[in-house]
Length: 112
Length: 113
Image 1: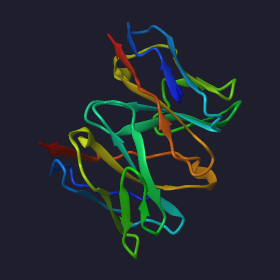
Image 2: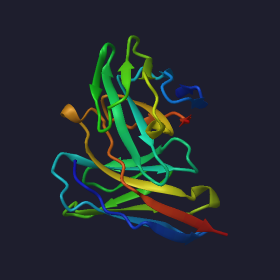
Image 3: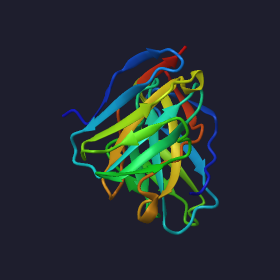
Image 4: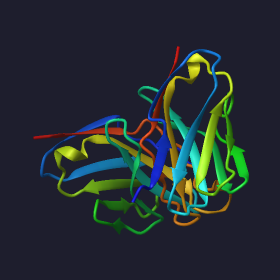
């Protein structure tokens, strides 16, 4: 019973490099989300998707792009990484109702 | 979504009940109260949610006041593994909220032996 799986778990990038974080869920959930968490703070929503082929901006979308080509996958891209994007990234998914969200174990990203 | 206020930290003895309060005085009629916890930087874990009635599941109980302006999460027999950051979140469960969650700072619960 995998739930929500994030790949990779750790990554170090140089400033200006690009990368894609992959989130996969096996619960047939409609909604998927990307959050970031900085030290000592709560999670902040970056982007979210309410279905295959749809995406929307969250609270802190700048510097990120997302795609949801398949219902089970939600990709988060950094086109040109900056040190301010050093954070722990969490993916989550939920059904339409009752919207209990399931989270992945996180990706720890360091941009140097 | 309505804002929530939680104490920054609380302590509890192992085996005793842990009662975590949350104020949400601006909650609107169609907003639910959700509780999540995050253990040592793992992904947040759903605990329980409710609209206006008290709720109980295998993990915890949720007590919501009659005016819905505050709630209490109860862990009936706290263990060391319950040490975590607990987040109280108010969100609209339907419509255009699409399950988006707004996390505050939460309450750091430390369970002592």
